[in-house]
Every structure is written in structure tokens, then in C-alpha cells.
Image (cartoon, rainbow, N blue to C red):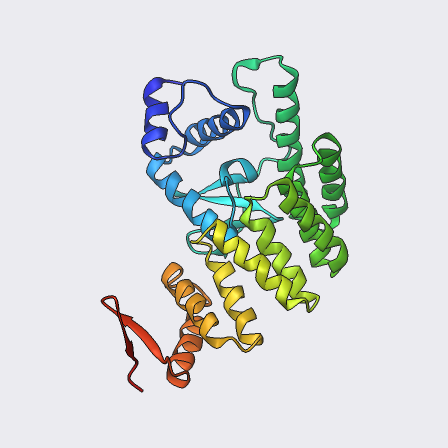
Length: 289
């Protein structure tokens, strides 16, 4: 990798400037190198796709937690058995999949930890691809289980296993995998979001709200978490609390498929709820009407 390429990625804030790189950063550099070689997408557009995937899925590092496909000048990501364009929040057909594609190890190092990291990443990408076809989902489960035998704290594998159980309506099993993911990586917003979803399905609304709140605290731009949190608050009768998150969703996703519903809910609350106190330039005054 040329110094100027590393500097371009640093300017785009895809990596942090450093004299020494961790294994996680090396994995990210490898993924960026593959994107650069296979797509010729600019660092700026990679960053835009990266940020959008964080907002949509609450991921800490989409470049490491998913595989990618070029869609015009931006990236789509394979995640949870689907191919998503994070900028439009739409699922897409994948015409560029190469089954069994293996990633190369930077520098060809023989270090055992590097080999293990490479093995886990390849297994994860294969498992994600296996999830895309219903008949191969059992094989995906086996691949995730192999990953967890190597790395019991692999949060993305735990989340994807949880989602497989969730889609099969096996909510108790899904809950356990999501909870393990939150322990494995307490800063992984997607784990708390998914945990909130399964708790909601199990009618544990107070716990679900706590999980959604954690997801929003970790990633304030997580639009879907704001949406689900607003719904949960409304079901509890806390309409003013819901209002804040309806408005946050509209701000973060002004043209998304659920925006009209969020706008309508916010309008209803503003029309029917009397806000007794508002703040104006630091002074507290009575709200009109």
C-alpha cells in the first residue's frame, strides 16, 4: 500500500492515523484495499456508504462486519442474509457474487493469530452468503457455530445466529444470542437494537425500550432505533417521549419508506398534546395553546 493511499483513507476518516496498526485495523486496511482494487470507488463515497450503513444497521465497523458489492458510485453490503443499499435502505439483487471467494492475507504473514483472523473472516463471509438461500441456512448455522468455537466473543456471528432464530420465531433462542452479543461487544448498537426487537416480540416492552435506548446512546444517528423506540413509547402511552424520537427519525431519514408515518405520528402528538412549558432563549415560559 502506498503512503498516499493510506493518507487518503486517513483524510476520509476511514482509518485513524497511527504508527502501529492493530489486527482489527489491518483487517480494515485489507478490506479497503480490496474495495479500491475491485470497485475504484473514491474514499469519500466509501465513507458515505460506511456512514449510511452505521445509521441503518447500527454497526460499529461495516467494513469488517459485512462483505460488499459495488452499486454505481457507492457500496451495498451483505448482512444478515441480505444485500442492502444503505443510502436508499432498499434490498438489492446481487449480480456480482463470486461463491467461495477467499480474501488474501496482507503480507502473507505466517503468524498464527493472523491466520486465525483470516479464517474467521472468510467463514463469516461464507456464512452470510449461505444465509441468502433458504435451503443453505442450516449450513450457515454450522459455519457460525464453527466461528464461535474459535472465537466465542464474535459478536457479528452471535447476532446473525440470533436473527436466524428470530426469523424462525424461536424468540427465546434469539434473545440468548443477542444478549451474548451485547456482552461480547458492549459498544455494538446493532446487538442492542436486535435485542430490543425480540424483547418487543416477547411482550417485554420495558426491557425492549431499555435496549433501544442503549442503541440510540451508542449511535445517535441510528434511525431505525429511533423509530422503534418511538413506537414502543407510544404503546406505553408516553407520547411526548415518542415525539422526540419520531422527529429524530424524520431528521435522519427524511425520504425513507417509513418517513410519512413518522411525520403523521409527530403531527398528531403536536396537535393533541399540550406542552405546558417551553424554553425560549434560556427563559421558561408558558406554551401557547
